[in-house]
Image (cartoon, rainbow, N blue to C red; front, side, top):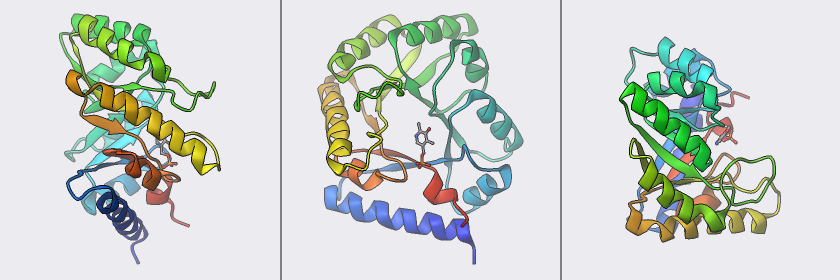
Length: 225
Ligand SMILES: *Cc1c(COP(=O)(O)O)cnc(C)c1O
């Protein structure tokens, strides 16, 4: 039996069920988070039809995308981005950076984009669970910061927001962090926000019920036990 194919089929079936319960007109994109996975498993997931993969470290994104350069994979950067890694990241031409987590980081990215004459697609990360260990802007300041980036960082193509659900076993806490993020997303509709990236292995169905249209799922896809 092909374990990874089976994992993918199961996850897609679960996404479909939650998606249809939310709305038949809702389209969802799945990012397979490959941060704990080896090249072979990523290639196998690709052969099952998965095209978008996410990494949380620039160095891993570099190593894996170079090793798999023969495949037309979309690479997403989803983890904390250090300013000294921006040049390397830009050189890798990622499809989307989910983790623009402050105005300071956005300005640093803008500067490097200008000097490298390139642009970058990105999402503003919102810390909707108010956890100190998480990056991101506070929900109540997110709209202003989003607009500030739009106005001051023309080389960053902001397309929406990203959030990590509350790290909790309490469904209510998870729901409230997704609801806050969805409210921020809705408030940015007239500013062109179209991507709402939220939902991981443990909470993606809840995220879908709050309108997530991009999921970042790792362990349940790649787990081989
Ligand atoms: C690791 C990671 C994920 C995926 O987590 P799983 O629980 O393994 O699905 C999603 N988003 C971010 C930012 C991550 O670092």
